[in-house]
Image (cartoon, rainbow, N blue to C red):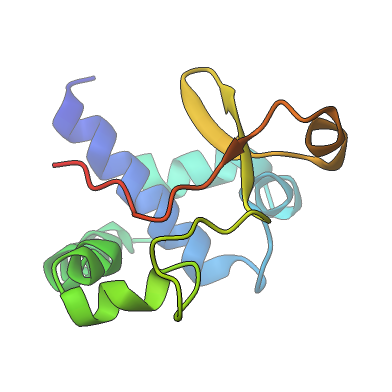
Amino acid sequence: MDDETVFRLVDRYLMYYIRTADRLQRTAPWQEEHEGGLEAIRAVIMDDSLGICADLDAHMARHIDAYEDEWKAVLGDPERLKQFTSFVNAPEEPDPTLAYVEQRGQRRPANESERRGGAVLIAPSRLEVRS
């Protein structure tokens, strides 16, 4: 399949999932509990067995057109960005309760045993902004 087809099918899958899953239900249990399972879902999104693919495509298009990256908006607004300082009265001080470890080239929050071991990174007082 070409990229465009793959993206369209993933979009349809997500829209169908959003419309039919229970609130807070993850995708794997949804697939297992869906009548007919993954094969029935495949028939809906690939073969348009329910005749709803045009609607699913339109729904995703509306979502994409209306999408706004909320964090990008915060990074572009100095007043809103100030809300994310560690301490209002000492914005240059890092919050010592925020501890991270490196894993696969990325930072993730440290768990309790990692915190006790002491090999943690403390969050900086400024947000790193990548372009």
